Length: 509
Image (cartoon, rainbow, N blue to C red; front, side, top):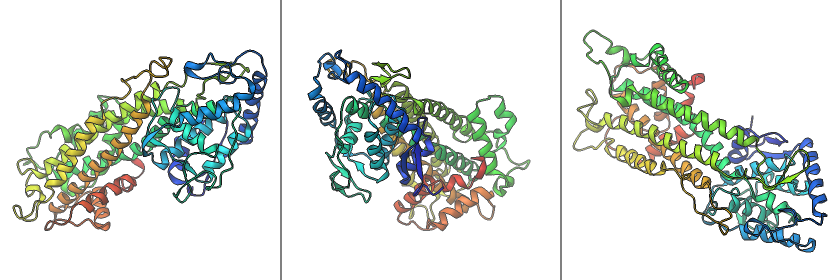
């Protein structure tokens, strides 16, 4: 579908990862289903009934967090909600990316649509209208501890709904909510709390990362196969029966991808002779399915967690199906934070192996007849020497980013919130790690493509030759004297990021 004009219908059930990507990254609009509107109205009836009760009810007629025992009279409750949002919109630092803010807003809307939060219909529809209009509240990097949800990021979005704070309009211009065309909404009982109490920021970033990692791991399989081919490695180790002796599903997929990429390679056929003494390759070549496969299985686990979280209605207090309003701990971000950290570990390891393959091309002791650094005139030309430096720097950074955020906790709210998840921080560093992995794979593919050309007149496989031709068509030159290298690295990274490299593998991806 054309995601730039599509509309995602938000109902009482979960949105999908693809829908998160469509709204966050491609500008798809949103609207609430009739079923969702009915559920929201029913949930609000419960709040209205309890708001009229003489007994205090948390989040409706009391303060929050460590102030939960303070009863708030009816005439001050709108002030309570307004003050809650204003005080919690306390992020600082650089602006968070537009796609992240749109993702977290969609996911908060999805929870509102369950009817479990108690907001009025007009609040939910105004929130949907803000997303649909492409108006994006300004959220800054630091402020969430990932417990009681992503409070500060979500509070900035609620603040925009109230007509306050800063937003960027559909054109990206920094402005105010009213100048962007939003009609301010006055929040009543429970609504401020319902708008800020969720794991939506970290979950949105997880959904985007899962989408990207699907493409990147397929691209890593393609890159590994290109390296095996142009380093004159053996493909015997990728045989299905050998892989089946260790039946991890991700490993089987990666090995099958590598076999498919290498199919029909004249370079591979050239050294399958009795004279060939190659028995086994270095681990970075031979064990690619095991590492890439483990990363795939980690992604599969993270996707299972994400899909459960997409189904969840996270709020505190929450309205139960039988009409109770109950305090709970479902806002704690640990389940999401853990898998965000797991993915950063997997990404770092895949990148580390990719960089090792890139390095092998440049060393005459290990590249089986290729020129030093794949240079045109070694000594005068440096070839791809510094491209490997760049990959090494990225991998070093990724290893630091792989240190878990979720093992940390700093108590807050006068020790009421004495254990937090740091899931937002886990998500932020995963985004940097995914970008770095994209660049490391791009460098390997660029390097392998030059090596393929240097193996001429031997012919590559249709897939590896297709990758080489893709890079050449995008302006990356073949072997020759040194040229300005940075733009070529960006171009190769873009080809990986956009999925153009993975697409050459076709349906096997």
